Image 1 (tube, rainbow, N blue to C red):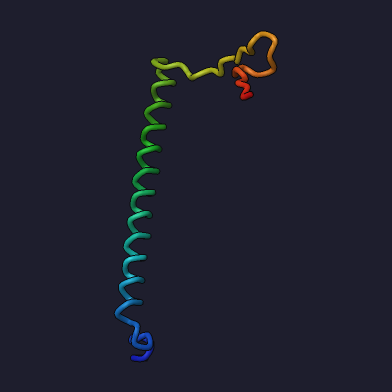
Image 2 (cartoon, rainbow, N blue to C red):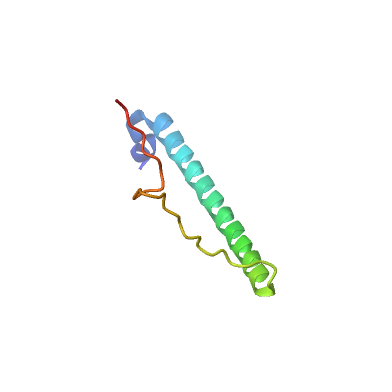
Length: 79
């Protein structure tokens, strides 16, 4: 068992790498958890505003096409 913990003489490199990876993963987990809860709270606030009639849900605006063109963006030509 002590050979396992010694990692064949590379324990000084292996265990800090595992520790660093664990710290980074735990930090990402905490950040993701915190962001998810913030977004849920923000969504709840927005839903309450819509229900109270203080804000109206956004509606999709129709896109106007340029006259004589299939796209609304101008075409640049390089000669």
